Length: 379
Image 1 (cartoon, rainbow, N blue to C red):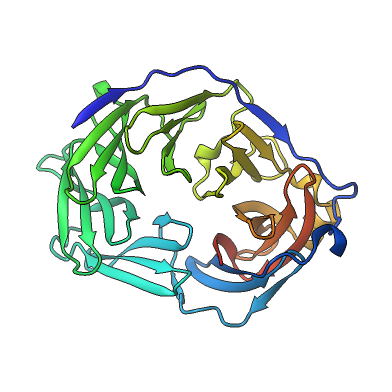
Image 2 (tube, one colour):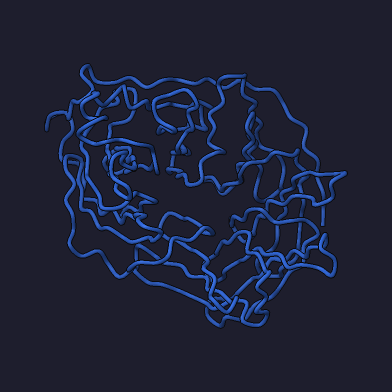
């Protein structure tokens, strides 16, 4: 396995605030917006520790509830999951210490599921992350060693059709997985206290061979595949884009203090086809714990959507009871940003805002929901 070292270059980042309508509540006219194109939103919502699906029909001007919520059903909300454009994959543990990894396709409404760890039944086994390819599931996990300080780390690769699996041992703790091309990418942490570091490891999905390792500085927050299939590595103060084929660094952007986009803090985010990343940006001094934001990788610019710029105080405080941002996505067919939020006055309830993007950020509509938006899949 080849090993590479990273040296950081210094580049600047510009942060822009968004513009808004004059009174913060303009919905736009038919001539300005048109009716757009029909879109189906399969919206996962969280309520009382469960995830369920809500089906919404939309165009550029309106959203309506579809009484047919589809066959997704209701599942316990998983802490280990993997989001793609059309699929939601997740792991849940069984009472006997085995588990299940499943994947739901929101385009075909087909669920694929495999029982895992029935061969081990180790209640001390800890699942760290999951991912999937077109035909395989991947699970990063650890088991205890003979001494309390010893831990064993593995990637379990599972053929979805046959349920056959292969365990690939790792020397470092796996933190996160992503899949691109024919490779599984593993963010790891060296457990040796004296030499703590992160690394990005590439594994061939066919041969299960560990191909390359890129050594990274500590404090990596997240890895994510971009629309070109390359891997974005997020830090609090910078990000890298690493080629998924050569493992070379394609670009390095270091932020000046106070201009950090903070997309590495977002648990769930979404890339559009142009390379713009939609995410929740934490705010330590604002009115809300987090706000919607878009990072444009082409220009290395973050656009921040402060609620005060496109919603009136009456809307924020009383009409929508806006508490915090729960997800951000994008309807490309209608050129609208989708903002999921939790309500402040009603536990377990939320809503979906739609706005026109900058430079003419403008409120379009709101849909109240009996659940907090978790993720949306657009058809």
